[in-house]
Image (cartoon, rainbow, N blue to C red; front, side, top):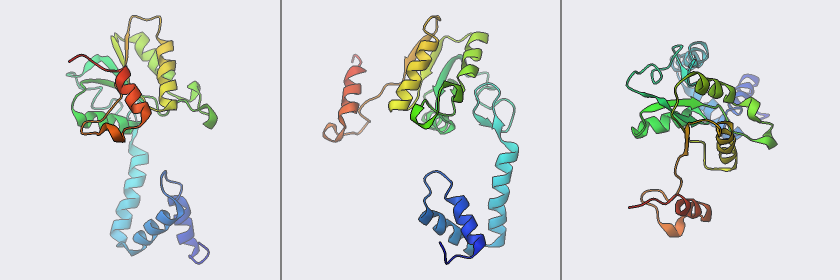
Length: 199
């Protein structure tokens, strides 16, 4: 990076801070930006500023929204008594694109990761507890990621509501559609057997 002019170095450094972007990818992006027209670069810069200025968290589910209440929570056709708990906003997008869920969401903005210093106080658990306490909720669907941190988070939420009358369910995990069993890892096969259902 020594051979780059100072403004390019600074741009590479800032781009490399993005998740999944290493120094080489950041350098490629910086070079792309250098070749782009001034109008395209201005549009990019304006969209970055606009996102930070206009997007906030929905007052109910904590999903990013332009309004105080997001379009999902504001939709009277949604099953308001069913809440799907997810780690990040991109999980909401994935579930919505499936078209299979008609309830509402609660975004935790992370998962328990003690080794990274992320404890219960760093997640939006107090907001979930308040929401359940103040509303008629019949089911919490725990859709945290199927990894150690996601499982720990799901277990913590289960314990939080163990004395309530709410049904607490976990998304099924197992062999993907079109998958071939010989290529599936041991943990996935184990989970798919554990969560088997009748035919």
